[in-house]
Amino acid sequence: MAKVAYETAERPARRAFLRQASAAGLFTLGGCATGAAPPPATKPAFRPVPPLARVDARPGRIMNITVCLRPFRAAGPRLDTETVGDKLVVHNYGHGGSGWSLSWGSGMVAVRKALSAGARDIAVIGCGALGLTAAVVAQRAGASVTIYAKERMPDVRSARATGVWSPDSRIATAAAAPPEFPALWEEMTRSSFRMFQSYLGLPGSPIEWIDRYVLSDAPPSGRADPVGFAHYGGWVRDLTPPMESLPPGSHPFPTAYARRASLPMFNIAEYARVLTAEFLQNGGRIETAEFHAPADLTSLKQRAIINCTGYGARALWKDESLVPVRGQIAWLIPQPEVNYGLVYDGVFMLGRRDGIVIQQTGPDESWGYDDANEQPDRAEAEAAVAAIARVYA
Ligand SMILES: Cc1cc2nc3c(=O)[nH]c(=O)nc-3n(C[C@H](O)[C@H](O)[C@H](O)COP(=O)(O)OP(=O)(O)OC[C@H]3O[C@@H](n4cnc5c(N)ncnc54)[C@H](O)[C@@H]3O)c2cc1C
Image (cartoon, rainbow, N blue to C red; front, side, top):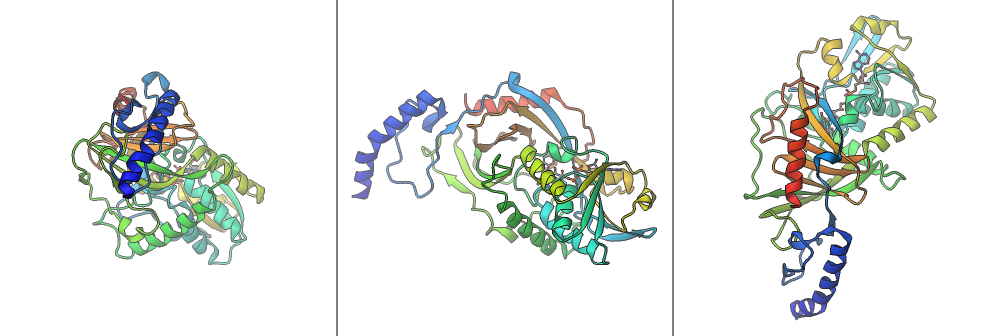
């Protein structure tokens, strides 16, 4: 009986919706708003796909092309301590493709170590995701903090990240991560996740939740992973809703398969501004400085130093275990109405407030591995934009 009621009562309403969606230029069931695709015969057991605005994916809309190097270490991020002269140096670098996602939890681990010797005046080297966040964590723990960095936002590599919750993206390899690392990773992931919730619902949406649709013409399968990256998602399954398959006819995409997952997104321009404002309001100072060798740090007045130099640690600390993993983003002019993400044909699209991210992620997980080329590649950017355009063709 319920089925009959749905078909008779909801169909006219749906036709009216499709007419309105067509007039509004929305991307609706069947890929066009003619109402040709019949609605599902029974009420879906999942949250219906809302009208999705089309991405205007044309090369002429590219407003910028940026390249970033993920600071990857097979053994996981470096969080140990050492002494340099009379300084206690706590390392906090090498977070691969997870730097934003792990920033709070990793900062908490580093700050705990920095304060353990009794210091209340802390120097943080680096003003990217890890440095800025660790500096705020240290202030909240009662320390007085100065950041010393060669670059600050928006010139740091962290400003060129995709901006999604990805705490185990290129964070280690399964073979090289020490046995105790997964538990530490879980602790950092959970404490970061908790902190991000406190930035939801703020003006400018520094952090928000979005739906990401994963589309494919063939049945979904895992991506090949020749590097053997560690995957720890199973440890924190309870934090985000599981990926759900969308039945044919329930979504507007032209592909045979569509899945959806909800996850936090960082509008990095706004989020970094909020973090910087909090740091400065709490009396923090940012000084421009470049260090060429660990011994240079002995000139600082602070006894406790947190080293958040990201890929820069490869040169500064001669850490050859840091491997660059190149990633390029073509930035399309923002469309505030595009508030979702897509993965299709090896390309990632994310509708951020500060621009539409279009990123080639390649045929397998090794894309960009050990590639330190930071020159933008226009042809790669245009090919990625063309792939996203095909979704709306
Ligand atoms: C394409 C791409 C997409 C990504 N997407 C995501 C994502 O969606 N989610 C996520 O969580 N992570 C993502 N990442 C990973 C994330 O961007 C990095 O893990 C993160 O930016 C590392 O931050 P960091 O603070 O360690 O380094 P950086 O941002 O590089 O900051 C380093 C700081 O140290 C300073 N510095 C370096 N050397 C010196 C020196 N010798 N003297 C003085 N100062 C120095 C720099 O000037 C800078 O201030 C992505 C990365 C890439 C490349």
